[in-house]
Length: 123
Image 1 (cartoon, one colour):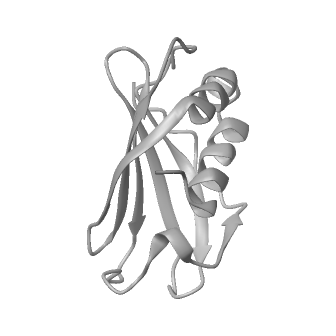
Image 2 (tube, helix red, strand yellow; image 1 turned 30 degrees about the horizontal axis):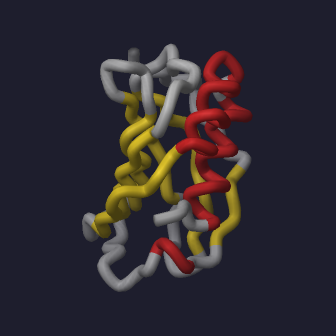
């Protein structure tokens, strides 16, 4: 499976907002294969596998990316998770207070938000 437009935009935004991991995020995104997706009812998770030798991520968890989703009142927040080898393995999008079971996140209208919280790398 390939990344959706939303997933690509969010991963690219992570590269912009986290310059120390920018090269690794972009390289890993290009080498990634989506293995599965899950609508959690309060957002979604996209699981991926990174093929080949790629730059290792310094952080294990990155946050601070937000988007306006056309069918939600509030911003959606995003987090990416890496495995012990420093490879991306999960992109998670979370709704603040709304249920998302009826949303197809692979085909949704969105706009990335300039909203920023204090940098919260959770290493």
